Amino acid sequence: MMEMLTKATLETLYMVIVSAIFTVGIGLPLGIILVVTSENHIATNKWISGVLSYVVNMTRSLPFIILMIFIIPITRWLIGTSIGTEAAIVPLVFAAIPFFARVVESALHEIDDGVIEAAIAMGATPLQIIIRVMIPEALPSLVLGVTITVINLLGYSAMAGAIGGGGIGDLAIRYGYHRFRTDVMLMTIFLLVILVQSIQSSGNLIAQKIIKNRRK
Image 1 (cartoon, one colour):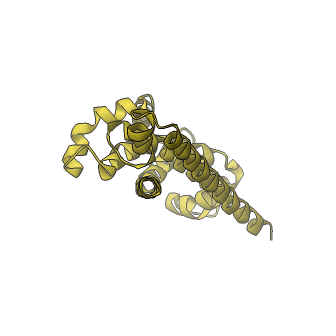
Image 2 (cartoon, rainbow, N blue to C red):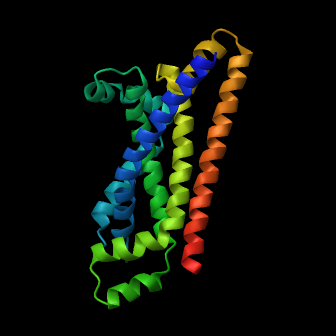
Image 3 (spheres, rainbow, N blue to C red):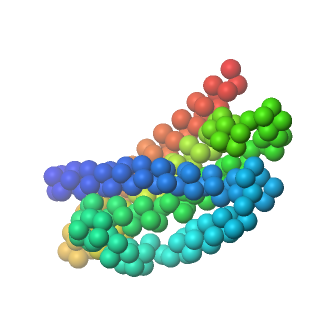
C-alpha cells in the first residue's frame, strides 16, 4: 500500500509541477495581453482583446472531464498516447491556461491607474511598463494566483485518473472505488488535503514576504 501511495503521489506531483510551469509560461503573457489591449490601456486593441476573451471564455466553459476527452486527438499527436501521466499533462495545461490568464488579468487590473500614468509620463515604453511597473506591482496577487492555479491543477490531476492519467486519482478510482477499498479512499483524500494545505500555506507565505519587503 505504501509503495502504491508513494508512486501515485510522485506521479501527481510530476503532473502538477510540469503543468504549472507550462500554465504560467503561457497564461501569464496571455493575461497581460488581455489587460494591455483592453479599452483605455497602454496598447488598446479591441480586436485582439475581443478574440482572446472569447477563446478564453469558451475554453473555461468546458468541464474538465469533457475537455480531456475532446482533446484526445491532440494529446495523441503531441505525446503519442492518451493514457498515462505525461498524456494527462496536455489537458491539464489546456484547462489551466485560461483560468490563470483570467487570474492574471484580475491581478493586473487592481493596479492603481496613477502608477501606470506616471510611468507613461516619464516616457516608459509599453514593454517597460509591463516588466518594471505592472508585474512588480501585482506580484503578491500573482503569487496567490499561481497558488490557486496549482491547487486547481491538483484537483484536475485527480480527475485525470478517470481516463488512466495515473496519480492519486487513478489510485483512488482503481483500488478505492472499483475494489471497494475504503482505506485506500481515505488515504488518497488525506494525501490530497495535505498537498492542498502545503501549497496554500507556501503561497501565502511567499506573498506575505513580498509585501513585507515592500514596506521596509
